Image (cartoon, rainbow, N blue to C red; front, side, top):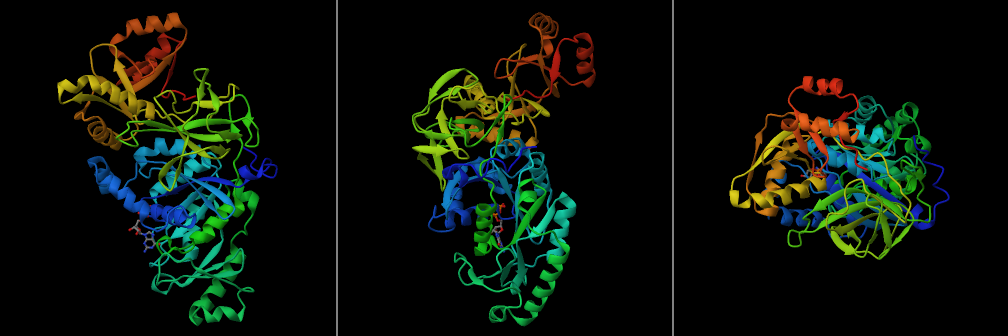
Amino acid sequence: MLDRTHNTPALPPEIARRRTFAIISHPDAGKTTLTEKFLLYGGAIQMAGQVRAKGEARRSRSDFMQMEKDRGISVSASAMSFEFRDFWFNLVDTPGHSDFSEDTYRTLTAVDAAIMVIDGAKGVESQTRKLFEVCRLRDLPILTFCNKMDRESRDTFDIIDEIQENLAIDVTPASWPIGMGREFVGAYDLLHDRLEIMDRADRNVKAESIKIAGLDDPKIAEHVPAHLLEKLREEVEMARALLPPFDRQAFLDGTLTPIWFGSAINSFGVQELMDGIGEFGPAPQLRPAQERQVSADESKVSGFVFKVQANMDPKHRDRVAFVRLCSGHFLRGMKLTHVRSGKAMAISNPVMFLANERELTEDAWAGDIIGIPNHGQLRIGDALTEGEALHFTGIPSFAPELLQAVRVTDPMKAKHLEKALTQFAEEGAAKLFKPMIGSGWIVGVVGQLQFDVLQSRIELEYGIPVRFEPTQFTSARWVAGPRDKLEAFVKGNRGHMAEDHDGDPVYMTRLQWDIDRVGRDYPELKLTATKEMM
Ligand code: GDP
């Protein structure tokens, strides 16, 4: 496990003030609304509604986006940066649907903390749990936001119990809701002894914050009706007796999550949550590489690609590699070593996303996410450094569980298909296999929905109508080993062999028996269900 404390105090101020995080939630819990309010408070947008409005303008252009809307999923992830008080926030968006978990897993390798949003009426839902487990694998610190308290919600203790039991993590209340549904008036801030009163009249107004001297302060009665106040006093007393107090180290270790209660749509509780991220952190953390751990305060720049997004702007057909900077102070124009190829790359057009607008950036610090437009040189897992051969670890690659052949319905367009497929393979959206015998392509994915999205994107972005069909194969294994053995194996199994988009050999079959047989007949060869991305 990483030691999350040792490098924090010594960080240069520009790095120490950075907070790089993601929001995890089940669809509909309020992630988009919360993001919007973050940007609003970060001064990155002027009016709530802009993120959505933009999203919708973009979506309405396409069937693919229509599909995204119909199914209530968000598949286009990006990173947004904004200032809040003394802090610089980098919010990395994660796609919500489970079929995109591959993308989400990689995104979560780029952040130092996560906010878990749950719906106060629904509690921990399936997708929340899955994403939480990913965070747990990396011991990520988690802040919890219980949303929609302006609607009928569950009992506060029930919600906390459910999180503790379902997710096996300690929960400490950072705030306590006062009333709920129509009676919801605000929350009591347990960490700072403040009363936060919600303004129902204007959704974009920040809550009124009233400093009080504990729950016996007579001032409270001016703001909270008597029956709610009595309940609040009782509940807070019980909570303080039964629930663990806030402990920064336990939070940083990922074993304790502070929970805030609020209503994103009413801008309530959001600022307190943002203050929590600022106050508790963490600042940019150590990053593991094969060679050593890389600390954010090292003077030399390093970073890794965790996401490649193509065709962000259909007019330009460009490709942006998202890089998490792990150390140093990056300046525009710097020449960095692309470790995989050993070549130098001048990074002349780095971009950052400020409120969804892509802007050229002159500099960036460890913890930041920068986008580097490129023509396909940069791939997921690639490292950029000032010369050192670093290989950052922990970027997962998933075994393709579903294989289908892709067919072009218009033969005139067949030759453009390869370009489209290669592009998506490099983006990490699918695995691509070219069988050695015959023509055509086989595509491997983790979830069925990915086929639908690919089909829509190929048509939309390349104008090629395609369909996916079952093949005779159901499993794919990468094959590695001594060259002569490998060649002999390929020769004897041509009907089962394909190359992936890097030209590496892949063995395909529908029988586990075949895979076992290869293991016995060719003990020098290694068959793996995933290909490490490094
Ligand atoms: P996402 O799918 O997690 O991104 O969720 P959205 O932010 O799109 O929100 C889902 C729905 O819940 C939308 O209709 C929002 O307007 C609504 N919503 C979000 N926050 C709140 C809230 O605090 N209270 C209520 N009543 N509705 C909310």
